[in-house]
Amino acid sequence: MPRCSDPLPACGARPAAPPVWTRRRREALAGYAFVAPDLIGLLIFVGLPMVLALGVSLFSVDGFGGYTFVGLDNFRQMAADAQLWQSVKVTLTYVVTFVPIGFVVSLGLALLVRDHFPGVGLVRTMFFLPHVISLVVVGVVWQFLLVDKQGAVPALLRPVGLGEVSFLGNPALALGSLVVISIWFLMGYQMLILLGGLKDIPKEYEEAARVDGATAWQRFRHVIWPLLRPTSFFVLVNSTVGAVTGLQAFDLVYVLTKGGPAGSTSTVVFYIYQQAFTFNNYGYAAALTTAVVAFLVVATGLMFGATKGGRFDVG
Image (cartoon, rainbow, N blue to C red; front, side, top):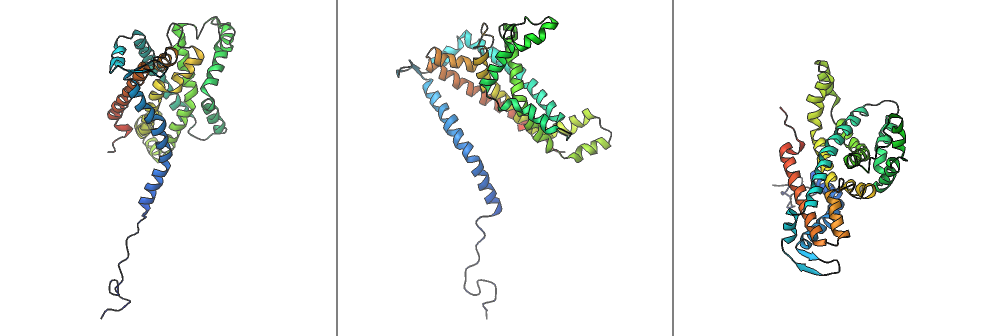
C-alpha cells in the first residue's frame, strides 16, 4: 500500500521538473547580454551602411539627389583608374611596414612591463597615454613638431646636420613619418592587449623550461609564443584592418599631408573621401568602399585559415 512518504508519484503528485535556468544557460544568457550592445551597434552603424553603400555603388549620383542606374560601371571604372592603383600601392606599403613593426614594438614593450618593478604602473601609463588623445590632436601636435626648419624635431637634428630635412614635404619621407606616428599612437593599446595574453601564461611553464636549461630565447620561442598566438592573431588582424580602413589611415593623412606630397600619402580611404566629398562622385566612392570591405573579408578569412585563428595544437 503506497504511503504519502513514498517517492513520487506514489502520492499522486507530479514529478519535480528539472530546473529551467541551469547555470550553463544563465552564463550563456549573460554572455549574449554583454555582446548585445556591440552587436546592435555593429549592425546599425556598420552593417546597414555597408548594405546602403552596395546599393549606391550601382548608381551614378550627382550629389543633388539625382540617381542614375549604371549597373557595374563603377566597378569597371576601377581597372582603368591609375590614381586608385597608386593609392592601393601607398596603402599596401603602409600596411606591410606599420603592421609588423608596430607588432614587434608592442610585443617588446609588453615583455618589458610584464614583470613588476618599481614604477611599472607609471611606465605602462606613459606608453598607453598617446592612445587616449584624439587623432586630430595627434596630427596637429606632430605637424608642429615636424614643420620644416622651425619644428622641434628639425631643431633637435640641426646639430648633426639634419635640421633641413622636410619630413612631411619630401615624398620619400612623408609616408615613413606617418608610419612612425601611427606606431607611436597605437603601441600602448596593442601593448596592453599583448600584456593581457602574457599574464594568462602560467609561470610554471616558464619555470619548468628554465629548470631544464632553456635560454630566454628558447623559453620565448617554445613556451611564450605558442601560448600567445591567439592574442597575437587578434592584434595582427585588428592592426591590419585599422591600417587599411582605420582612423589613422585617414585622420593623420588629412591633418598632416592631405595625401601629398605628389600623392605619396594618398591612401585608399583618403582617395574614397576625395571621390565622395571633393568630386561629388558618390556612386564610385560607394563602389570603392564595397571593394575595400570585400578585400578585408577575404584577407581576414585567409589569415584565419592560415593560422587557424591563432589556435595551437597541444601534444
